[in-house]
Image: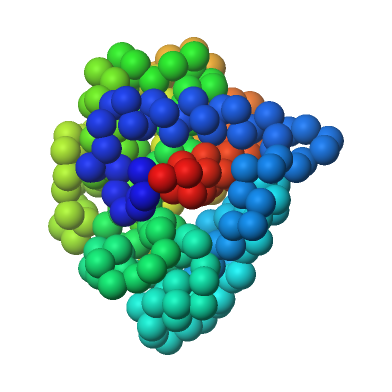
Amino acid sequence: MKNLITLTELTRNEVQQILELAAQMRRIVLADYKKGPQLIGHVVGGVWKKPCISSAAFQLAATYLSGNCIPVFGAEDEMSVCLTLGNMGANTVVAACENDNIFRTLTQRGKANVINGGSRRYDPIGVLADLMTLNNRLDGISNLTVLAVGNRDVNKIDELGHCLSLFGSGLIWYLPPDDNLTPRKGIVLDKPEAAFAGVDAVLDLGTNAYSDDERYYGNTGGITRELMDLARIDCPLLGCRTIADNGVIKEYEHNAVALRENCYVSVAMAVLYLTHRN
């Protein structure tokens, strides 16, 4: 794997390979001594609008594997900066930007390997981190039903649906019936009780500005205890720590936020190693 633009182009074996390698990398993340030799002499250039989980994860990932990461924040012309980093010798360029076309152009014109750190349509590292989290919490990602709620990080929907289908699992998405702005993809339900019933995991995508959390059953306090009780026992919740329990906002005991964060850097390590090796 020389580049990672979108998970929709990967096979089951390729996704499985990344997840298995990320599980090995997680041992370094959790160890007291965090140093592996896999990226000695390897330089990662990163372009992000501002510091975020993606920028932190790739900086840590390169450091844990004895490489170096050079982050650039707030660039007006992401394409130009990415090409410059490659011309200056960076082995891999990670970019997070709205323009999906940049990544294809970089693979054709640039000298470095290319990793999509999050674009308008895709979020491959974030989706792999979600899958790894589910794999840890549910002892596998086969034969699952995962519910997505919210209308913000919808760039996960295509890739998550694709990857789950590779393992015989399915993704459903709850949206309020009067939401006419969010593009509907895949199986979309507009009755919350039906959406939550029997699902194996819930993924909170967050809500856009001016959206009502309670209408979307997402974000802080939008998901209620009654709805979570409709799902499987000990249903993991990704993307959110809290639920509303009898009108009181409480931390949900089965939230997987911390696990997902160390899975995120583990996936970044795995992808950097695979692109570097090839």
